Length: 306
Image (cartoon, rainbow, N blue to C red; front, side, top):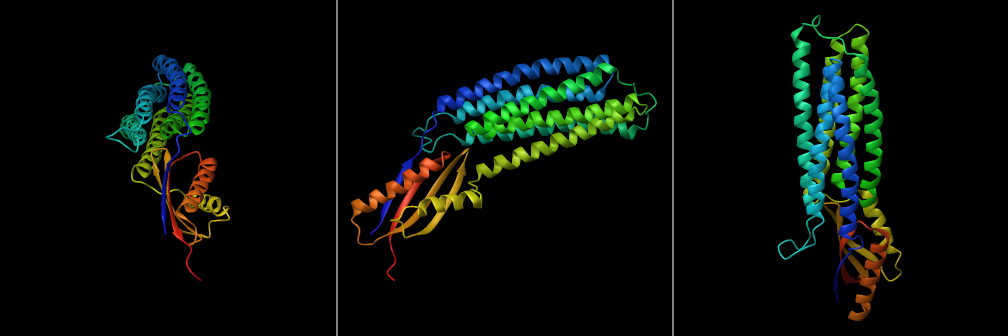
């Protein structure tokens, strides 16, 4: 005797998910626009290539956030005939595009900095003004605040694209630290430090891009959950006294959601109705304890004869 039960977990309304993401994105877009103009002005007026590079990085945040908004809106669409499993993976596509934007932005900054460094003409490099130093400090404080703000809501609504955008803000904060060091060094009599700072910014940006890209790819190729999560699911199922064992447990990450296929053992003498009830109990307990799980397939097998 065996019983297959398939259930959907749709506890989180798509509208709430999208509204939260839109609100967070709107705040960061406005902040980045103001910060980009301020840093670009400071970089030009105070003759700092590092600050100009940092301004370009902040400006790319505006575009990347628009990518995130579009990705989340598409991912929030309800399942339809052509896409019966939903559209969550489109958020991964947005994260991949964001990673490529970061990489291209960082590459341009890195190439320009490297050209200046290998040129050997350091005597003609201008010394950055105090305005550039001030802009770097303001940028660090603002971007770190944006990181924690975006990260909080990304975790709250479990959005990979929004979390990627949060790390974009963190990479900008780190690049501003590099700019601060470079500008400070240049003002102390080492003009090349400004270009070296731009090169450091490039490394931070590329590292962040790689992390975002790797995470998105893992979600695109049905990567399984981590061992700890699977163990928690296993333990959750075994709390039901009617479950005599688990033959198999498979998980896969689909966008920002989890799909679970599980085979359980129950008393072989039970009726189909009783097996069905146990399958529902197992499903309900998993759903209650794991909000990220969207789809659960419970397969019931008779307990092996001893």
